Structure formats: structure tokens, C-alpha cells
Length: 429
Image 1: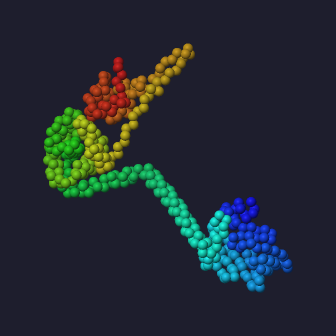
Image 2: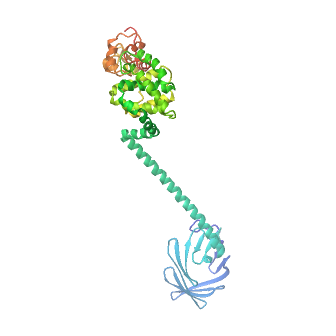
């Protein structure tokens, strides 16, 4: 519909100003109804309007108009294509901003305009609407910028965390050291107090005394018992666990250290982390007294003694972490060997019959290692079995059941259960 511009959109997609502009007739809410005629002569435009009178105008330069309106000189101009425009009119110079609602005049607000549903407003009402519109628009723009900034910060944080993670993977030792320090931050304060009470005495202990103290702290203190009361029973348990080893050689030292540990508890009765701090001090000193293999052996045997009394307590689980941190060890979960039933494959002969072929000597049909037929190298792939224990297993053949492995030095009931998952004794061997 061309009449009154109904249905027509402006550059912002809104309803154009509702008015009628014909060849000789103009009608609008603000301008009323007027007859108008226009002609060109000598480069000038001649306009006659029943409401505004007679006007002669020309355009000497772009966006500039010079006119005589009913005998009065008129200079008009609009300059600028950005958010701000410079305006020249008969009332002087002003600066305006064009937006979706209309135009706001910064120097002369009453000359602002606003258009709502095609209805053109001017003056104070238009200025008030423009101010409200610009406040809302500024708030929306600021919110958008804030959300973009927040999104950018999140991306930056993700990138930094990813970089830290990658650096941690690239330098695992440094990363583990940092984690250990963070995990034991509070414990270091307890250790400094305990060093003043027991540190010098520990420095004078030999490896037997240190191992005996570690056993008492882990097994007795780890379950809330006194070291002196638990020492005799622990000595018997260690003697029954094996015949010769670092832990067995420390049995006599239990009576040398049990009273010292209890004196330490009496001297620091309010220290809740005393067992952890004492265990950390021993874990720090043991690597200087024993070899790495003996160090691991001692810890595993102490753990096996503790498991004979039941599942580990929360304190004992934490002690294992402390031992690893302060002794410079790292624990890994042992991966179970997958079933190797595929190791036995069938192939058909020329008549179509099938025969089984054993893929590797020393393996049973379900893929586990046969203690009676496996080679020395194959036996060493079993949990807790090194070169010496593998030789002992070879020397003890034939085996009739897995439980007989407890006759091998250093293999207790708990280790037998670990070995059982990957080993078997085939019948008829």
C-alpha cells in the first residue's frame, strides 16, 4: 500500500513515517495538508507551498543547500557518515546521532526526532524517548561486551589449564614433586616439631631400628594401638612370615624403639598427625640405610603383616602415600594380564580335520602361566617374582598347588592371591 507509506519499511526495517507525498499534495501529522508545486530554472529549484510560501534553492556542494524562503536567507547542511553528524540550519550549528529510533540532537535536544509505528515525534517527547532508548541500547551493548569478555577469559583459562597439564605430562617428576608438596603442606609443620623431639635419636638408629619403628608405627599406631603393647605380637608375626630378610632381622630392635615412640607421643599429646609425621621422618631416612630393592621389600612385607589383621585403615592408606612421597617412590597399579586363550589356534589339515597348536611353552589353555613348565624369564613376569624367587620356584618343582608358594622366602598369603590371578598349576605335571 503506497498511500500514507503503510507497509513500507525504512533502512532499519521499521515502518516509514506515515504521510502522503504526491506530485502536488502533501499530508502528515506534523505538517498538515499543503499543495505544492516545483520547477527548475537557471540551475535553481523553485518551490511554491500553500503553507510555507515561495522558496528558491540551490545545492552548491554535496549535502549543502542555500535558499531564499519568503525573502529570508537559509543555509542548510548535514555532514558526516559515522555515529555523529554536523548539522547547519537557520538556528545555528548542532551535532546529532542517528539511530534506529530516529535522531538525537546533542546540542539542541528539543530538535530531536523519534518514530514509533510510523508516527513521527519531535521536540521534548522525542528527546525523552531518545534518551531512554540510548540508555537501554548502552546497557545491552555493555552486557554483550561483558559476556564476550567473560567468554574470552574462560577460553584463556582453559588454554592455561591445558598448558599446565601438558607441562605436567612433559615433566612428570617436577609435576609429582609439586603435588607431593601440596599434599603434605600441613604435614611439614608437624615434622618440624617432631624433629626437635625425636630427630636426633632417629639419626643414630641403624636400619634395623628404623625398620622396626616403621613396623610399629604402621601396624600399631595405624590401628590406634600403643607401640610397646603391640611389639611382642608383631615380633611373632614377623618371625612366622619368613625366615631371613630385612624385616626379620629387625625383630630384636622392636624393644629398642617401642619406648622411644611412646615417649614421643607423651611429649606431643596434642599432635593429631603424629603417626604420619613420624612415618614420614623414617621414610626420609630409610633410603640412606637400605638399597632400593630392600626399601620396597620392607614396605611390602610391613603391609602384608598389617593385612593379616584386616583391611587397611584410612590412616594406613595415607601412610602408604607418605612413605612414597618422602622415600622418593612411585606406586603404579599393576595391570592384569589379559586372557590369552587366543594363543591357541586351530588350523585345518588337507582332509579338513583340526589340531591345536600351543602358542607358547609354559602357558595353560586359559593363558595363565604354569608354575611347573614356565621358563625362568616367564616366571619373572608374575607379580612379586624377581630373579631370585623365580629360581626358587624352579628349584621347588613340581608344585601341586598355588598355596605351596608360601614356602618361597618373601611370598606371603597376600602375595599368593596376587600370583593366583596370573598363574596356575596344571594337573598331571
